[in-house]
Length: 323
Image (tube, rainbow, N blue to C red):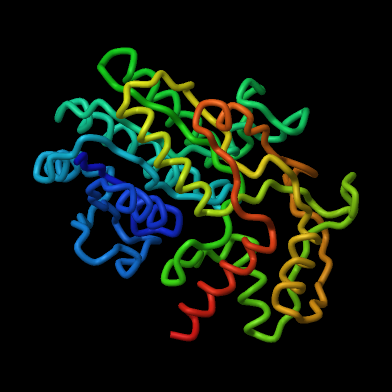
């Protein structure tokens, strides 16, 4: 039975990945500094190391102490808009943290690595759906740090034995477990849910884009489907299968913000009156991914539609807020 370290495993996405790895029969160790994660998201009985990936000595000790065989690296600062205001903090956490983690990986002799990257590496794509071969032109410090992370993993694999791949996420939503919910103040679903709980109107930024209904179009993927993709990537790496350096992980279709709001109203069976505001600077009209490579190599097929995403997200939100 192999053991995998999940960095950021107390976060919304990381906790799902950790649980799906456990369900696959593997042992899991979670490493998280709890800057945005929640200790309660870590399942009972799973070893927990409270530290940052920037602390290379602590990471190396965790790898040795728990006889770790591979790493899934999700720990990072997120949110492109925030990174514009705090670029050095993002570079310190995401780039310096990756460097320290990889140094520990090499020192301990770990040879298996799955990296949580982002569709932010593409910036505003000229063509959608965007493929992995599209130009990489991030438009925020956050996107830059995720791309540099991919470069660091690839460079390390050139110099040292390291089987690896990077998974470029699109917009991750929903929940696979009621006790694990998205608590981000920046993501669409929790922003709408929080507005509804406060008796306020959900805000939509811009309805004058060149899209079917004028609102931004994004690729929303259920967090359970995303977590399952990690497990398959781990399967393939453990089997020694040669993988591409990066894969898009999304639904492969675009949904507009107004379509998401309509789905929330439909699932919750309530009329939603939205507040329309001006566009936010830098928001591209449409970004969604071509996921054929993940389908071919990882057997990736989404299992949840938009209504499922809303239903599971709302159930987890209510479970945590009402508690």
